[in-house]
Every structure is written in structure tokens, then in C-alpha cells.
Length: 130
Image (cartoon, rainbow, N blue to C red; front, side):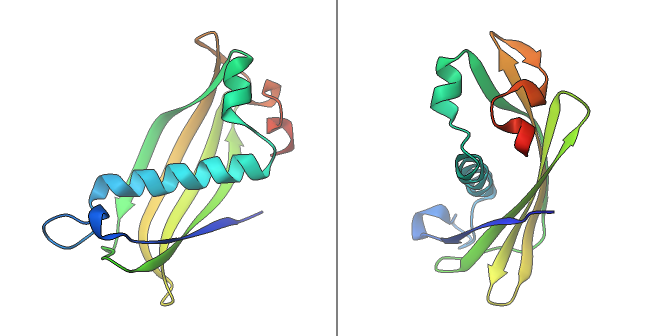
């Protein structure tokens, strides 16, 4: 199973009054990592949209385990698998470095839509190789 990994650093403005990363910011980290992963596989959102295909998130399950603070270095790890004919599962973790401490664990379910209707994941250009 291939593991894709992207490194980040927490910026001051991503923290709330308590001095920890706001919970909604983790969704941004996860999304950016998914986009970079798909681009690394030759899958371009803009090109697909122009072809009438949109990739959307249908569900996110997220467990917050440890709070990151300003200046923390972390990586977002991602693995994928397909679930049935319509769903692509992105299993993601946010790991504080260098300790390797788990901050967030998430399961993101994505689907493809063509003209607003669900389509088989393998029919989306590039997804047959994931």
C-alpha cells in the first residue's frame, strides 16, 4: 500500500484563543494533501471539471487526538482504497514531528459526479490506476 506524505508548519493565524490549531484548519490540511496526492497521480480537478466531472467529499469522519500549536512541524499521511464502485476512501493522519505523535485520524469518502449524478470511480480518468 502506497503512503503519500506532505509536510506542513502551523502558522500563527491558524490557532485560536487557546493557542491551539482551530479544529476546522485540520480539514484544510487534509484537503490540500488529497489535492497534492491526486495531482501527483496526474488527476487535475480543473481539467475534470471542464469535462463535466466533479470530485466531491460525501463524508468525513475525524478524530482529534492531540492539539498542534504555532510553529509545530507535522506531516499529513494518506493512503487510499476503493469501496464498491462509487466511493474512494482516503485514510489520513496528521502526525506531529519529530515525535511522530498522532494529532488527527480521518476517513474521507469521496465520489465522482458527472453532470450532478454519481459515476463509477474507475470511469474517472486516472482513477483506474489508484
